[in-house]
Figure 1 (tube, rainbow over the protein chains, first blue to last red):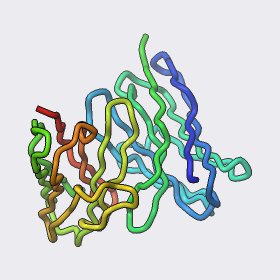
Figure 2: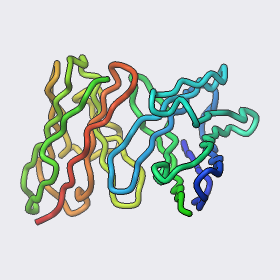
Figure 3: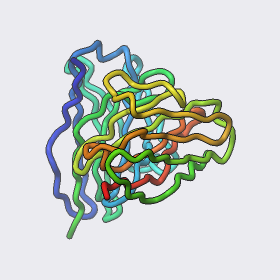
Length: 118
Length: 107
């Protein structure tokens, strides 16, 4: 069965970086794009962008173009989200989710809580 | 960006009650509309896609309808496990956008 398993919670200080992982299983990793979604505490869902798992080309939503990096380790069926120069507003749960046509997200990771605090 | 205006923000329903949640897009999205349920501390779960297609494994008391800019999710008989947050999402244009959510509670 399809599974997306994400890494554990992170506690970071402002200015630090964090890299969270999303390991896929149960399907051919390169057949589906991977998307990332942010959920700040008590807030709704915000789409961050996606990465083409065949080419490695990332596409970022406007709010996530500066300090955010999507990457892959295809041999390990794993996608990564790195956030540089963390600030308090980055405190959130970050989900990876597999893209299925037509633009639906049927499979989600369990989410990674990133807390940024001095 | 396409804005998704969801209403109501919160809702309280009795067991067996029928409820509806609305989602209004700021422009036509050609039924590229999905609904998700999110229970506390969990990941979102896809309920409906293509405005009215029921995702496999989702109970048939959930249904979706709408076209153009107006869409709705109906739960025909409220059950305790239906408590949670509900979000609509458009996939017609980048960036994909979600509604602000509806918190559904059992009365």
